[in-house]
Image (cartoon, rainbow, N blue to C red; front, side):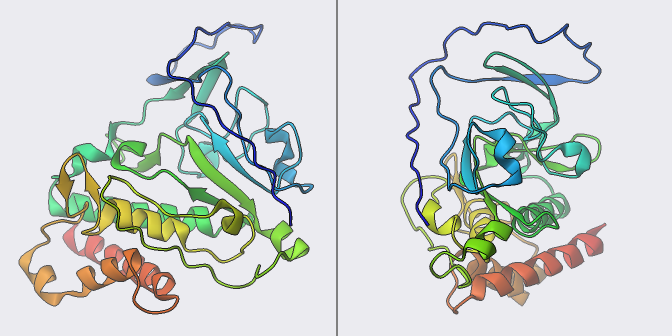
Length: 293
């Protein structure tokens, strides 16, 4: 399988936008926020194929990286194809409208970082939701894998009323069509892919290969990204360490199961250990969440 590389140029500043004929503005029925698109961005990297998501781009695509998406993937300024709308259960902010490179999305709530020192029971619930998001984006009935390539505490927000975790910054999401991968059968397509742990000295590090993510059906990238950058002791952000699940209650710390699952999910010691650890971690967090309510 050949892979076209489309370079992305990120200019230093944001340029003025021009509002084209897009119809009369809709009245705001809920809080909203704005996102801006820099001039001259190239929106994707493509693996050619007749994907049903081709409407998102100027050419058919089996696997592409969406750059500077609005908070919801339901629409983009470069097309009107509705793809992963929040109304259908996808964990993205609701798209309200666009004008040139200005995009309006609904206001979800405070960023996940604001909950770093929240009560333990709240952090457990948020951690469980994050693992559920990782699972939903990896395995779903639509057979599309959405891989998060930029994962940090600032890219998620929490609803003030329902406490629901939502992805608010989806600038870098790689979408792979598993059905097309099975059909085209690129080299090692059916070999499970384990992401490599990246113990770097910077915040929110992730190690990945777009070529491999585009060519494998079974991939642990989203589990790795959430565990390493958000939940485990390896997570660092704004000078902090320990991850969202830092300083657990003494009985949980003494038991050791949570720490062991987080470590295996972030930096597995066993072959394919992250897949099993992620499954058990989701179940364990659900159990803890129910127990603290």
